[in-house]
Image 1 (spheres, rainbow, N blue to C red):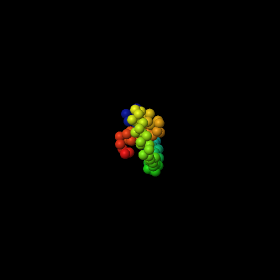
Image 2: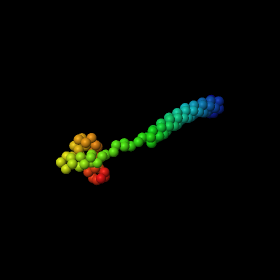
Image 3: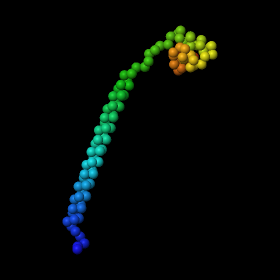
Image 4: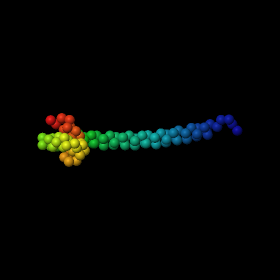
Length: 103
């Protein structure tokens, strides 16, 4: 029995290198798949950004008669919510009217 077995050592090295290369190849495939997934998500994000830039704000204009009716309802002691329900304007719009933004 010898202390050194050169042939078995070489086989071990060869098997180790093969196994390492296989693991590396699998890892690179996974990285490539993840990169493709990231690229696809980036494309979807760009589509959503372009879609969002095409949206227009609501262009509903409040009339002077609406402003007067909101102010009158407030003098009657109604809350913003109650005024909003009666006039079909949002509470934010009612607040703006009563704070003088639309004067």
